[in-house]
Image (cartoon, rainbow, N blue to C red):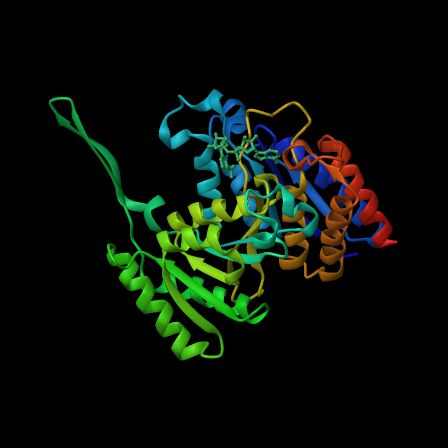
Amino acid sequence: MATRSLLLLPGDGIGPEAMAEVDKLIALLNERRGAGFETRTRLVGGAAIDAEGAPVSDETMALAMSCDAVLFGAVGGPKWDGVPYELRPEAGLLRLRKDLALFANLRPAICYPALADASSLKRHLVEGLDILILRELTGGVYFGEPKEIVDLGGGQKRGVDTQVYETYEIERIARAAFEAARTRRNRVTSMEKRNVMKTGVLWNEVVSRVHRDEYPDVALDHMLADAGGMKLVQAPKQFDVIVTDNLFGDMLSDIAAMLTGSLGMLPSASLGSPDETTGKRRAMYEPVHGSAPDIAGQGIANPIAMIASFAMCLRYSFAMVAEADALEASIAHVLESGTRTGDIMVEGASKVGTAEMGDAIAAAFAERLG
Ligand code: NAD
């Protein structure tokens, strides 16, 4: 039996509630398919600050480096608003992304027909939507130096963040985007702000060159990121794959989230480069949403983003394509049947909590696994 090692980092707020629903699916795969998943669970974010004094411990980082994949819940919450900046819960997430060198963040935005009415846009604009946003994850303004607040005296301070991109960083995310497009509708839209940012000029230049030299078969267009935001809400179905930097990707993927009805529906995968000897990619899977302190502890969070993140894990880390398809079909089936958490509730549907939604998906999944 193959052993597949998973590190589970549930985190804070609704993170542990959502992760509990993935545990059920892992148990099913081990039982029904002899999948051989071995899991270890560790703290991250605020929970790790409280118990271990840091948002991610060195021991947890070592496990993250050695396992096949990491499943991450969510971190943060008002309890840790006052902790020093370097120790804030999100620093744990940023360290994981940086140390695992996860440079490509894949965020699908898929609108299940059963949920088209939960979107803030009209049904005809979103029904059948299927976009993949590739966000560069380890560079740009979240990491660039200098990054500081300087006291200028006289009650004045200066806050500085630095946007930096080098050629290789743009090349590898561009390649990931063109390769993803080849498995989809063969179209990439690159978004930056070349009109006002030097990094935008370089981004545009490098993406164009990679396209010309290596992927001329894929259609490429360029769009300013602000115009891209407008187009995403005006006519989102025009896009196939969108590739963009860390900051714009953070915002544009949240806009895309709302097209699908709820942040509670959106999974993501973060991938590194393949290892030169083993060919294995480091990878982390996490919902797009945060720790949702406003609903944490009430058992009402939507676990689908977390479950769909696990489906991406089956697909990209373990090549368990049939199982990933079955899990995604199970989600669609449960939604079709009118089972809804509060965030995607519509008239006439039956409202359930986190565990009931997880159970319904697990039951549908078990049926498909046979
Ligand atoms: P959030 O995503 O936690 O919540 C935004 C809104 O969406 C809230 O009203 C919440 O109730 C709702 N929501 C989110 N996920 C849901 C789900 N699964 N089911 C039902 N409703 C859901 O964003 P926020 O409120 O801006 O941030 C809360 C905390 O999370 C902050 O501390 C923030 O820093 C942190 N955060 C963490 C991550 C992460 O861990 N990756 C991402 C974003 C925000």
